[in-house]
Image (tube, rainbow, N blue to C red):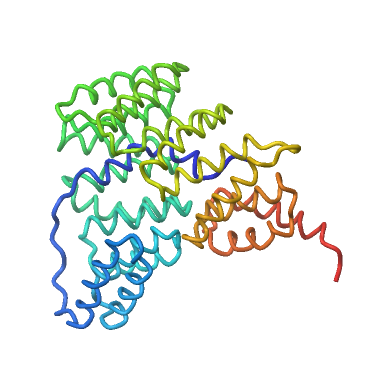
Length: 372
């Protein structure tokens, strides 16, 4: 059983930078004047969120803001982003959905809502969050590219290709759109077409770490691991602060079963971003892979990492699910796995790919429990 977050991470690497790389200023609907107290609370919350230790206080202030003025969409948006950052995806989705209702033309809102739904395993919901906005704003940049990724991840590959082609009408050499179009062609096993597209993306004046990562993914598909790692390394050189290339490299090594080198990559990310949930999950997966029945140090470090995530983000679905798997299948502690599986099933959407396995494990644990 592989860790759930890692399969989509490789496929969505281009989305992470694309969403952060470009903003299109859009008009926000005219709303009634905001409650001054609510605005004050929101401003205080935003300031508190800038302090790494102030996020809980920020969430409390933003909750006060939306209570004082339920129509203050900016407060709902900021609250949703912070809740998502803590792994409470269900509450984040609720706040971002409300922000989207209040301000349907706010691009940052629909992109954030789509990303939260994607993280929760709701592929259809991720697509729905973006489609209306993109239809009305076809010349926008961030949301249309996020939609391409959402469609591709949701299995609607031909629609993803059509969406990418529409973006290229407005931005003919955009490296993000070209990279996404290339990855969509990979899904169809059109490798030659994907290679032509990614070469165009790599030629763009705007040298893009995203294009390099996509080129690496295409090389992996062809079985050229050495070339892939060169692309990932070049991506890191283009953007030293962006750790996605190292995460991708670690993920590839993880999936290949090269756990020691995968662990090195994830530790390198944590040296740069000590609180990176993705890197902690990856390192936990690598250490779990290094664990043995007669030497459980790998399992125990994986447990420690997953607990650290849950201490900080109690509702993180990936950490919850994977800690349950660790207890159930590796540490042979089904009693510890049961409440985690129950929590995962209570919090995850019906479409989440981990639900079937969680239900199977939970039913097995119930069957083994002695009658009361």
